Amino acid sequence: MHPELAAQLTVDGLLLGGVFALAALGLNVIFGVTRIVNLAHGEIIVLAALCAAVVFQRFGITPIELLPAEFIAGALLGAILERLVFRRLPPDPAGAETTSLLLAFGVAYFIVGFSLAVFTGDFRSVAYLTSSWQLGPISVGQSRFVAFVAALAIAGALAVLLRSTALGRGLRAASQNVEGARACGIDIGRMRTISFALGSGVAAAAGGLVSMIYAVNPDSGSQLTLLAFSVVALGGLGSYAGTLIGAAILGVAVSFGGFLGSAQIGQLIPYVIFIAVLLFRPSGILGKSAT
Image (cartoon, rainbow, N blue to C red):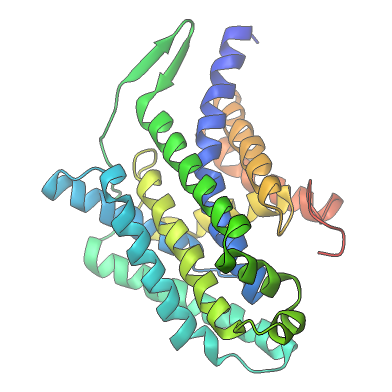
């Protein structure tokens, strides 16, 4: 392969990986505190992407301008889901794990049905920043670059929140040791609600950026859920840096796979990586073996 072509595919993959990372970070935040595998995560991303596409078509508001509103709407949806649905899980861990999966399936299908009723089954995307910049031999798509920068900015703000604020320390304490955090006076119920709100808000923001890169319809959510799971599994569950590294690797793999094989091969790669990681390194790149 020509070096210039390899460089082009690598740049495309890294830009794509920024959005993958944002989608996966929301999933990681929710699981870290609640231990709930939110199978409706991809549906929230798609719902936000469809809303961004419709708003852009009707009012001309770009997904970047819509990001704060989408984050707030996603956070409200996440808080409502945690309070009304996932808060009602049985107290025993085994029963809660099984019930949470069933509830998440139900929520996912409800969102799909709602999206089909509102947006129909048409594929939608945002035709914004459709040209590219030429940097020597490398072409940089404007929409992908802007989405990448926005994703990094949100991921950086999330890192600051988790590392440098009292709220972030409370969330991390609740994710590491529930009983110890409760003994220190941390309201675990409040932390669970905030984690769902924060994770869903980040997912909705990722959806706005996804609308600039992909065309999605209400049935696309399961693919994005698996994509987020693949990133989390590859980087290591609970590892912030691992999620970023895993997203970069997955983005580059999808870019090369789609070019060397076909678009279908590119879509297959996350499934292959997800299975391979579970078989050969369940803890991921930077995850702890105990996870």
